[in-house]
Image (cartoon, rainbow, N blue to C red; front, top):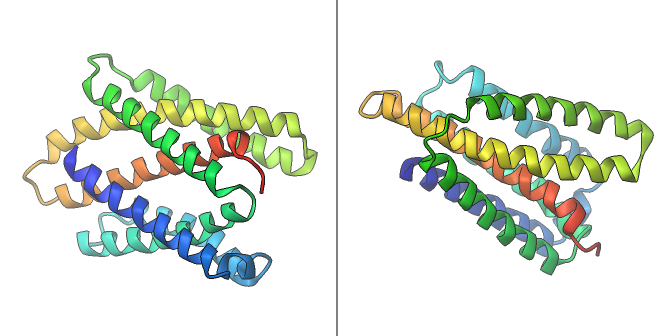
Length: 210
């Protein structure tokens, strides 16, 4: 999985650098409530959908550029976390997530157990918490928000292990073919989404409010 890992780490680092620069420059604070914030929030979703559904039409280089653009936009969005949580709690949660992610990925890569059933269950759970999050926009329930955060961590932990196993098997099928570059980029995007979502859900109930 070294190919996936290299692209994954590059883009996580890119997002982290952008987030820190946006916060230290004061741009993150200025962005809140502005039209730019809507662009930053909605554009990553559009890019992910374009990459997923247009992978056959885009070249490997184009997909890489789209991933970089996605990582930059995510970094801009993540910069607002520094306005809500202390820097020390963000750092602590980040390293805790990194450790858990590494362990879960290692399990998914090495286990002989087929994790497909668990992956399907976690995918259904993901749909459930998305619905719950939309519902809580109206209810504004602190207890429901906490439950969503806890379940979110569990779901993305399971997805991390399953996705790693799935990407391992996919890599063996495409190794040496023209599709390998695209598969690596899209696989790294999947791992990126697992990591970032697990980090944000974990931060929502472990982070110290600034």
